[in-house]
Image (tube, rainbow, N blue to C red; front, side, top):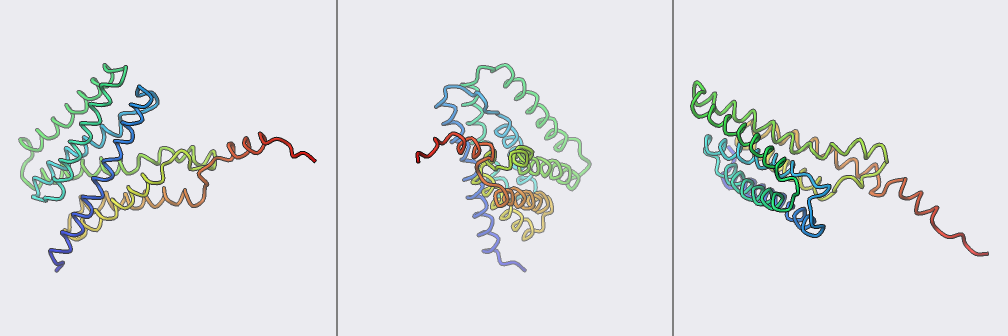
Amino acid sequence: MIPMDVKQYISWTATICQFGLLSTGIQVCLKIKQQGSTKNITFFPFLSTCLSSILWTKYGILVDDTPIYTIGILGMITQSAYLLFYYINTRDKKLLMQRLMYSFFGVCSLLTYVKYYTADFDTAVFHLGFIASGFTVAVYGSPLASVANVIRHKSTEFMTFSMCLGNFVVALLWAIYGQLVQDNFILVPNGTGVMLGSLQLLLFVFYPSTSQRTITYNMSSKPARQV
């Protein structure tokens, strides 16, 4: 039997670390403000995390898991604020609004199905947990989109070490919590996140943070030594 204080310590440590990870969106917003537009900055991380937070909030309420729906609510608040800031500063407001409408219509349809059309409580929990888990794996795996560039240029300059490390720590804590409460919908996606995070961190071990192309350019641009 796991002592309750151990579960609480792990859950709230995970919650605090998760909130810290959610707060990294502030840096993106500051970059948008600095450059005066959303050029070269995508809103998809904000949107996917917001949708994931909505699903986990509902899941946490269904299974009466306070840490899960607490961080879900915090995720909805922070990501909604980032999306609003993005909307104010983007020039393509129509595209963003369309994506938002489609996404939230899909989530609302899912929540309506879970509430009114599932056969029983266990089926509702299973379907919602399965889909929320899928979103979580997608969020953890999103930095892997840069792997092709990392391997091609033999450099991790396309990845952010602090973000990868943060994802790894958060996934590890939630995986431990999922094991403690015996909830596979928490354990499995976060366990997958630990493996994906380990792979991302290994890239920093094998590849430098500066590309070979940049190193070659810097060396060739040095003036010849005078004899």
